[in-house]
Length: 143
Image 1 (tube, rainbow, N blue to C red):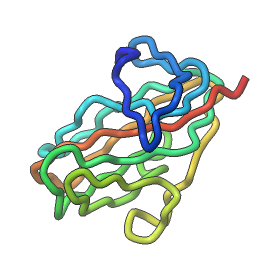
Image 2: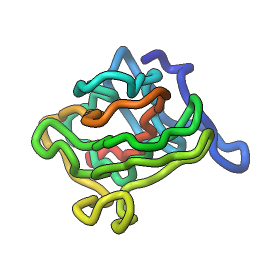
Image 3: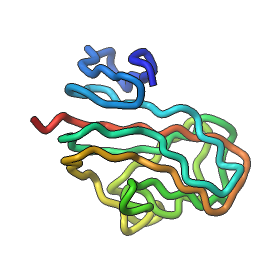
Image 4: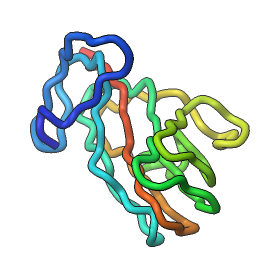
């Protein structure tokens, strides 16, 4: 992921994060955005690499293609496949669902995690449909 692959949410803001291929550095005022992930095949995709000593404080799933209905999508890390989102089945085109919401997007979902040695944020597709998503990761360097 190049340093120019990013999205601003809301008012224009200074983007204080820098990226090198797949690694995070610095402080993030706007999210790191993954490449598009097709949800038409059962698979686990490493969406965003997390550098060491990083606090991930929000993970969101953005429907960038046609609306998705009937899917089974989990978003987690290398340890817990559904840490952030569990069993997302419906997202309308251009909508974003986020971690820590519970209920329809998964009662197991947590809002954030500290990664002392780094890791990855993964998207796991169990039930397939047509569509594409991107993962938005909001993070802060812990030290």
